Image (cartoon, rainbow, N blue to C red):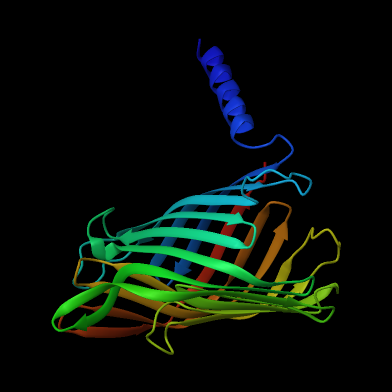
Length: 315
């Protein structure tokens, strides 16, 4: 009975997909599982399990219908679990939920994103961050692409005007990419800016770097990564094997007024084999910032072992 019901459900889904999109289109379903470990001291750890399900539809180049060129989306959920007590807070588990959607129609891109982070799911509007953007492609060549637009962000901005908290602000949306034989670079500004650059993208040894903002408390909210990649097999059997440095930031909402933030540096190496990636190294020079409505307490810690494991598969 169960097998028959499962077959009927699968058949219905196939018919529905075939009705909504042309059969010549490309569909990808990508489940991703992550597990992270960060040691803050001799017996203090943060465990970070997470899962992500991504979907992408790409219209065939020969398709002349009026359907969208790309439809992409993702659903993610994870937790950060503290092994130790946090001063002033009874909570040790923090959750993070994310929804993302993108539609590309010709030169037009529509994007929406919703995040919820906090000690309890859906506890307060201050836990949420919502983004709605539109951009139009102005440059589209083999070596360069440029999309410019804008939208609205709804979040706890911390901006107060006339005694009123401002939660909705207009923001630009910019996406720029350029590539040649010596470098491949990309910059995105969707909410907060980030940038990526790859030197010698056609060589077996490559240098990759990235930087991003996790907030506007500079320089602590600046995240960066610089790594040496080795591709002994051109199909990418082995990927990043020696990272030079990385700066990470973790933020947690405890209550509507209290928040917690960790920033730390790591040195690590990574090996990627097919759909499995393992990263391991050492975290050091970190600090914990506990912020309440009337106070801010910063505590430094020595750090320790750092590791993450990711498994993914593309259907």
